[in-house]
Length: 333
Image (cartoon, rainbow, N blue to C red; front, top):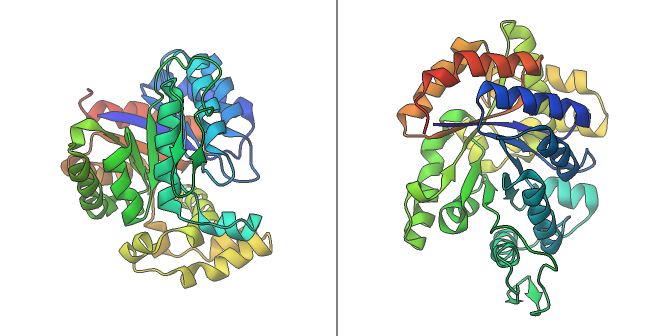
């Protein structure tokens, strides 16, 4: 079993350095940071983390090809891989249409095609090849190549929530970052990934599939639920219909929350609108609550558990709990 941590990019850079050191000491294998709009830059954060750690792999979860050109993604990937001594993983996907279209006014076109062609181009670039492309969205000449040597082809992980993007995890990626809201959603996403694997003549052994869950770990259940509610208030309206159906919810259920949080900047009201059903998106409570649901995932054959925000009201304490009370319960690779 592999273990990783995922963070939003909303904290001071120095915090990530402290958390990465703690994660490395606790036995985690990977450390991921998102690159959500208008927050801190994930590549900058991960540069600081790379210099402060020795073993743990680092990665972006996720970059998108609308706000960051695929050529720049390849530059970032090869540079961070060099800086970290071969520990960087590039996490990318299309991103959330709600944020890209509504916040930036950008056209969210052909997301699956854009991601597939981006993966192909970056694989060429970090393999030190000309990245000539004659695709539906990327048309590059043979002059498209890195002007410095990439130390290796940087592994690419795809973030995914929709069936089509989940299929591409199996077809073209080195790994996957499927969001499991709720965690038991794994049983529903696996057939889509397996279709992609079959299309490419591959098996699950050929990819690193991380079960990406949200959790909030604390002995104070009320504090744990409040921290989880804040994350749900921020992102809930942007979740895919397939995920919401697993919970018996719709985007309309989140509209008053979105209005309070994003339009009126009233996080307290938004948090109060989060229902018990919505809290099932993640796991809130102590180690026992976490292990009870992780055991169900492990029984399905998962080999990589990835713990995502908010992690808990005290993040260092949550890392310690997972390292002490969760990781030792599972066999390691």
